[in-house]
Image (tube, helix red, strand yellow):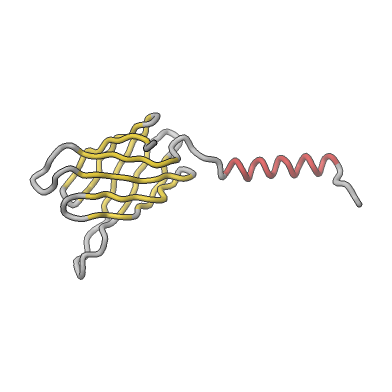
Amino acid sequence: MRSIPSCQAALLLVMLAMVSASFAATPFDGKWRGQSNSKSSRCEIIELTFAIANGEFIQFKLVTSIRTEDGAKGNVGEDGNATIHYQPISLGSVTEHHHQAAIVFKGDTFEGQFDTPCGLAEISGVRAR
């Protein structure tokens, strides 16, 4: 059986480390939840849950008294800032624009402005435990 020369083995280890680093978890990965306590004329409390993996939004659900919105696209930057885009669940033949949110993460908390069916909403929350 032939053995791998030490320089080739070292190169292989460096390449594996680089690949695994590109898939490393970010400080913002995990499940999050939040809500808006400000009542608008159209909605009661707005509830939000989402999950992030490798800095990317992989689950998203925004619940209002008008409707539920699922699915979002976006990433969290290394600085904790994120802009995401989402759209409402289909309501028959009604077509609506994409909604968006700007979120800032700090430690185990977040704050954001969300374009919702109820208007612009300030939503804050925490990492779900």
